[in-house]
Length: 389
Image (cartoon, rainbow, N blue to C red; front, side, top):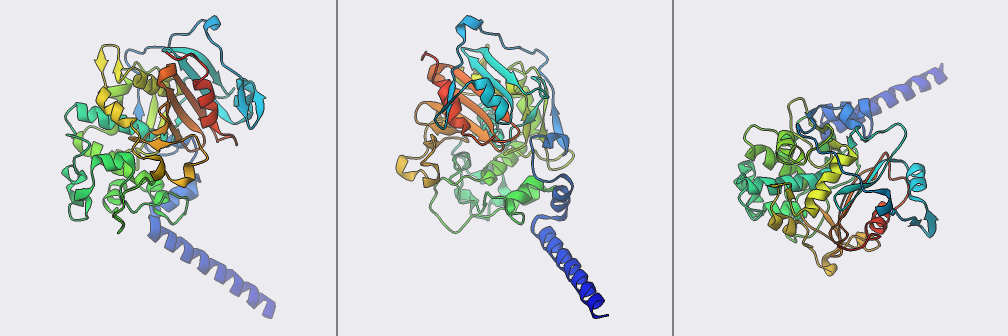
């Protein structure tokens, strides 16, 4: 029958097309990456429960936050697109998991969604980049990395014949490299490949530079991925996760565990995206900044490195037009800057670490999504509401 033949031809054509697409996709990003996408779907804040990773233990000497007396705390109502909201209503109705305000070194405000508590970590996505930058600063202090002006090839000699001898550690920190890396959700693209690959080292070492020689700010996770591999190499057998725990989290008295997702069992950390922490422990990194890199009697990151981290790398005329309608005015060492006032790290699905030095305030927002509102503006409202110190 003619109609049966047409149906059969249609089914065969669909199958052939599907096989061709899957084959092309596997060739583009690798079969393991494709399998992970098909099995787990798009990235979520619970990815650390789905993929390989290294566990982070709580500090052997945990230091719970002190709590400010209620009469010393005033969390303001906030403005969202011209409407006044009580902060708790805004958190509840806009997909927030956790919200913590640290003022003068003590817990001023804390809120959690009903199914999420203070001891439960979730993915902080690109806030991980800023933590990686602090680790670079610690590695410089430990003599593992000589200087931010060192060429990348001093630590990753495999790049020696690829033009990377002109690329410095600072170029990666400021994201002004010419790395041929496009940050988008193209399923055939390099960013998706990096997020799902099981051979991260091979993919990093396969990166190339573009032909352009104009070094300008272009946000791309590839710069951070190279920094992550560099850290892994200089640690000489210790993992980036172990270094984070030993050099920063443990001395800061972290209360809870976490995880840093890796490309495979005993593999490399995805340093640009895939650290999972609790809100309270993430806030410690903001307090470390307010402390000029010290915690108690220990200097964990040098003040000079932090000063360079928060020095605007780009003038107003160099700042991309994409950010003209935001509060963001420049970029430092994997940190976003708001004028000369505040510092912020943020990641996919509404993860934020906000620090305002002159107001001595740290604010953390973790979410399951962005919730449809502008959190940087909200955090800045809260951060600037307390008296300057």
